[in-house]
Image (cartoon, rainbow, N blue to C red; front, side, top):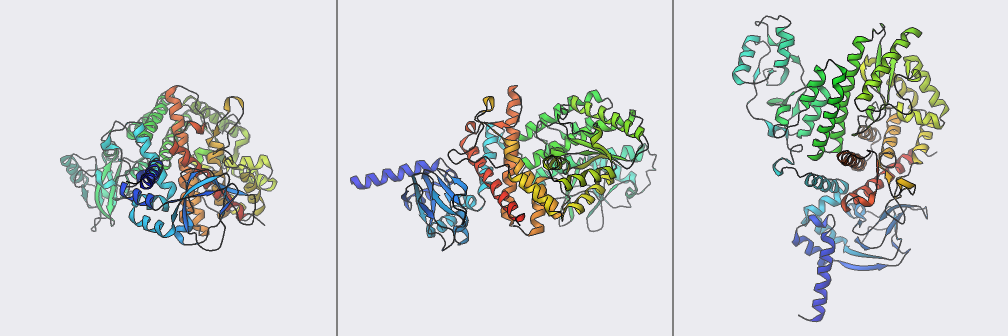
Amino acid sequence: MTSTSSFTSSLLQATLETLRTQAPFSGMAEVDLEWLVERLSVAYFPQETALLEAGGTPPDYLFIIKQGVIEGEAPGRAGTRLLQLTSGEMFPLGALLTGRAVANRYIAASDTFCYRLAAADFHVLLGRSRAFSDFCTRRIASLLEQSRRAVQSEYALAQDDENRFSRPVRSLIRQTPLSVRPDTPLAEALAAMDVARLGSVVVCDDEAHPIGILTLKDVLRRVTLAGIPLATPIAAVMTASPTTLEGAAPVSDALLMMARQGIHHVPLVEGGRLIGVISEKDVFALRRLSMEGITGAIARAEDPSSLPALAKDIGALAHNLLAQGMNAENLTAILSSLNDRLTQRVIELESRVANLPDVQWCWLALGSEGRMEQTLVTDQDNALIYQSATESEQAILLAFAERVNQRLADCGFPLCKGGIMASNPKWCQSVEEWRATFANWIHRSDAPALLHASVFFDFRPLYGVHALSDTLREWLNGSIKDNRLFLKRMAENALANHPPLGLVRDFVVSSDGAQAHTLDLKINGITPFVDAARIFALYAGVGETGTAARLRAAARAWKMSADEVEAWVAAFHFIQLLRVRHQHLAQTRGEIVGNRIDPEQLNALDRRILKEAFRQARKLQAVMSSYFEY
């Protein structure tokens, strides 16, 4: 071997070793990685050199940053840098994939070396390597999948169970489902359940479509205690129109459905026809996790003093779900659903002894609870709405609300330091008073009004007469949808909270004493997504309160790019997951639980995803800004 070939071989090997440590190259087959490296060239760009100009012809190369920093500048806005890319990152993926010119101007922010791959070779590699193609077409989703696997390894889960929540729910079917016709006598249906040793029977029509379900728990209340003759057709006591799930749906969907609806059996269908029934026991057959145990214990609790222990059980279950790799969307929804049940039981038990007046009322969840986005640690944000009441009747409702707030504090939901609770007379109002309060905020549009709107406009009914909340939501959407000035003020306020991306360092962190070198994942991380989603929802007249649901609904209303919206949703959920993981780690160490992290303490993969997530927040804010420019 000549010295020249030896030198070339050494360079290729060094490039291989560099790329192997970074996504997506770390997941590529060795033969594809070698194919890539053989076709790479290296180019040097002095500081302030423009690598790509906006507009014009499609790019000739894929760039992979070897060393240095590249920034993206908005066309026509010299000096306004929208994004920053560092070692290991690739660009311009979107332009190469679609064969269009780049939308931004790419500039070397420091002396920079890049690997370059010809556009033709880029498209060949897309066809050769599934790992490379997957990353390029759904970058943040691909990175999140790698992070999820890393979390599972970190928690040392059993290998045969690590994908339990993503597998199709039909995989949990253990036997042929028991089904009967609606005219079947109860005696016959119950005998069949006994023979099959099953806790449920599905009632189907002639086409095998589920039209009802009866469980053993239903039998006790609806048949035995009610004294219903066993000759009665099962249709008279079944739960009609049961919630069903497609057999191809992931197990996590079944778990979420059970948590939200308080059910323990789900009929599975394909093409509308019954194929099986799964229970919560099937979902957790391999592990000692039981939502049924927690929800059942909450439902049976007759003494409020027993509920704090169940609140701890909810936290323990959340830890286990986190360890099993459940995504943030389902994890926070399940956690919120269980917290809902706990809160509802507190309210129910207190209402029994409160001697409440004959007044229609509804308990409202606000803030993160209203959005169903609670993490492991959250304080109370709630309110009360009633149809009408005298001064003495309102005093009774306030005393009742104070007892509920204190019970919830005992369960680990601290009292709101800002006093945003139903026991505060300011937030215990009639329907008409709430309308007047909201109308005042909309008219004023000042900072306090905008702050209140960011909490209260996420309300949803939790207990009581839900129609009161629905009426208020309908009024609010009708009043604010066309109030462009208020929405513009909300947008301006939201845009003042910049995602903490740095120009010199990856992240902008605090320099304040004990908080030095940290950033707040709640304020700096999820709030930009939450605020934008709220504004879009109000603008579109959408009734959703969850951030992801709001973004998706608004996207349908204005025909936004589905891929772009899903990237925003994925970014939001990654930051949520990072919050939960951080809180869990603090709890296990006995440390103060909060939302601040030192990004330097994250592993390289999570730092990269967090940076990408903040970029998505910037893109979302840019889109929001464009909607409210005059």
